Image (tube, rainbow, N blue to C red; front, side):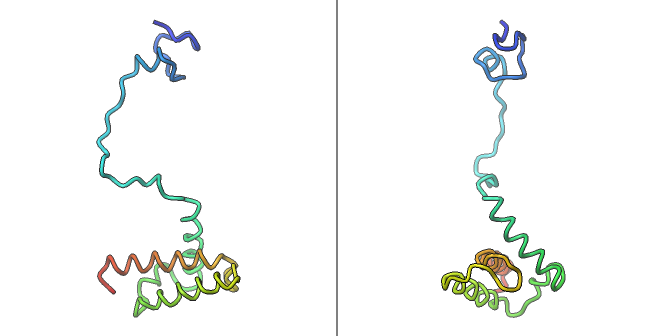
Length: 117
């Protein structure tokens, strides 16, 4: 039986009923695995930009050596309160205070998982 759209016996181009009927459905056991496609990548890119600024200002991964790590809670709240007060952009970086607050939260998650809090 041929695909009407492409006149091919095994049509790799479309998903018409004829082609779909001939293609076996693939099997992939991914139930319970992380669904990384749920992440809003453009929002994460904002946090990466903050990390790159920090890398250039200090050194790569310098944030891991900050002691005590709870200082990032203070930094997070500073950025959040400034944003809530109407100051949308950080004066030093020009990035949104929310980007910085998000970065601080990522740091805190990392410290918590490392057992350093």
